[in-house]
Image (cartoon, rainbow, N blue to C red; front, side, top):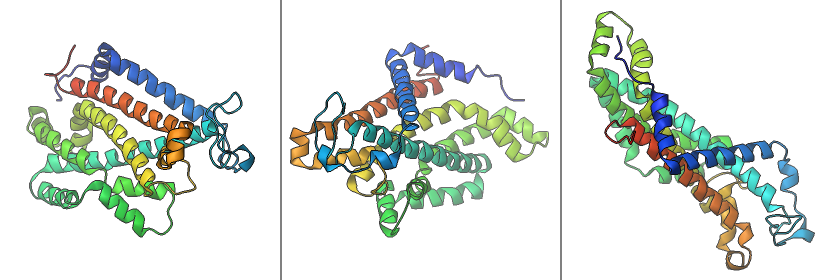
Amino acid sequence: MQPKTTNVWKIMWSEIYSDKVALIGLILFFLIIGTVYIWAMFLDQTEVMFVNLRLRNLPPSGEFWLGTDSGGRDMLRHLILSARNSFNIAFLVTAGGAAIGILVGLIAGYFGGHVDNVIMRVINLVAMVPFIMLIVVFVSLVPSYSAVTFAGIMILFSWQGTAVLLRIKALQQGRLDYVSASKTLGTPNFVIIFREVLPNLVSIIVSNLTLALANNIGIETGLTFLGFGLPFDTPSLGRLVVYARTPANLTDRPWLWLPAALLIVIMMLCVNFVGQALNRAADAKKRTI
């Protein structure tokens, strides 16, 4: 009963392949992710974070490629662990927020009426307070928290945008003939939602998730930089950038903070370029192929 559609994944790949910047961004993204996670498997966080004052503030050399910090820690290995932790949070928050947002948005858009009104009132109520401010307040109220707790707090307030987007698309899909025909045949509502409506929204969802990932990388590192992110004993890219707060480090020891800052910028640019290509793929009017 569902209308015939072209291969969504093929369209998305073709759009990325035709955009050389997005293609380079995608390749670089997977190279960085692969390097970070494979290398981190062979590192012991306790050993990497061990303080050795005899090696403090050494500049880059053959032994320490990115130098050492004020605690004598190898900044290259520190950077790898920090990147892994920051990426873990970004991936977890993106996936968790997407799961809630997709479910809520589809239910609100498909059923409409009172269900939609109640859900939208809740979303509008939460949206009245800035997203980052809510996270800062919750983190401040929790006396002791872990990386998982921090990710959970971010997920709690990161699904509204996805829900609103999917609600709009579900409202549009709900008016199409294939949905009406399925209802007439007595197909259960949730079967229609997940078997027929959801597949037609794959390109929109993937595009939204890609841009959300870049956003979550920036939010996590920014909050950690401000002291409201990952716990102090957890390596993070945002905590490495904190070294730039000290004037001496900012001018005389760029190896402490510059690699982390560059990695954040590169990752966000890569994901954004890919996200823009996927966004074009989701809209037939904007496609370049």
